[in-house]
Length: 175
Image (cartoon, rainbow, N blue to C red; front, side, top):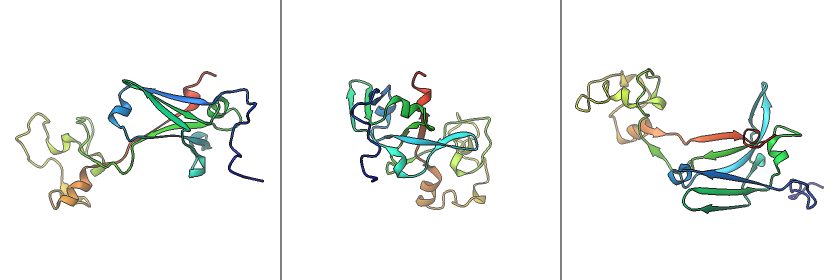
């Protein structure tokens, strides 16, 4: 019979559960980040995130050691995370999608404008040091949202999509 305990580790297991450790300023900068493990699968010879909430594992405990160490315990053992019998797990750190951010991308002189999603300061100011010049640098009227039309359009243009990083467990654990 299938049930809620199907994915639990047996009491006599030879491996201990994983504790995911993060050190640095990442979680100070994004204190509402969501962290979980996501089962991996193979598509076209590449490891990718398996779809579906049933493939996500959330921490069973978490804590901090001041000033910049965060730890999260998962009910997963190293062989599961590495992918000994299957494709293993990714650890996912993502911005909370409810914490909207707005802004322009950092200047990149080598990059040409290709749409609102990648709008950078160099697209607004041809010379990033010349803040007094507001001459048109790109044809902003040819895009879906109209530049300077309404506050809602400007919010749409400057919305920064939430960030998500995935690192496979085999990249963090010894073989």
